[in-house]
Image (cartoon, rainbow, N blue to C red):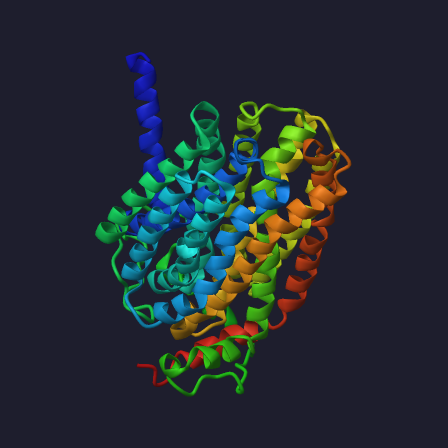
Length: 488
């Protein structure tokens, strides 16, 4: 590359870095967001890698679609079992240390996966890979709530959840190409190396915030308003609670906490958060959304290979474009919801994901029915963007309706059900594909019918969220009222 193109590339990279730092509100915020995004990226990269090396694993170990789905399912199942005690620890110990320790365990399990010489060994080694998944849900939710003000959390969640999208892309593209050029073992070993680097970054760059919002990071005042990003003005940072004023929204007197939440047992905390109607709706919607995403992540590459006749190397281009669509969606969903809240639409964090899920289902249908890559790609692009756009508003809304001293345990319950859905999804998708496929593993018919069937829960998600928007304002007011008195 000549000097001039190198200079253009360097200038473009410098501009992009300055834009991102300005958009998130300054270097201090960027550091926190980048580290948390990398945690999600690492876990997602592993799950994306399993889908990317599906063909190599099936040929090397002689496994079926159901067994392939089980590889992702067992790590999700182990995470579901571990997340409840992790949620308790999140509310009571230093969260950064807990997060670093979980990544260390994940690295050791990933090294064992890369050394597996049989399906049984690989399956057992992946039981321990749920460490990051189990810890990331409660700890990241609690850290985000303490680092960032309520009015910005959906937008901030968008930046952090982009790590999940980038991680899946890393697994699909880098992991898939490594498996094609070297072996599927090389893909797992690369992820272990990245995990070691992440542990170092967490220990050095991620501080432990005070609980209750005392450590909230406001946008850097020295940045020009245009570089702070929409909605990062300190005067707008509490837009959610500001929108409640003057509307006569009263808290639910039955659910107002009159005792210290830290003294509640896990059982008491679970019973309490499951009495919050909006929280239950959000948990269901999140579990259903990740159920579909887990199936898509596990069998998407295999479906494209069979349906459109693309080689594994040729899948890279379309997968990259669809990944950009998902990234755009996850960055836009939270921003749109927060913007609508500032415009007075208090329930926007419920409405935006509802519309996103419905649009996802509508655009997936023509993409799944056609056999033309060119025709399918625009539909997949929009569908992936909408599916990803639903998550930031949902995650921010859960923090809105739960007391800050219960964030860890509330998120552990949500993560437990989400991981359960993710554990069931690959096996369910794989089993249905095997049963419905007229041509066995070599036919796309079974996967096509399976994906079409699984669009129905996304439509149901939209209906549930639209119904749940009515309880959201009162539950936000209840959480705010519970946070005022006598919490040590």
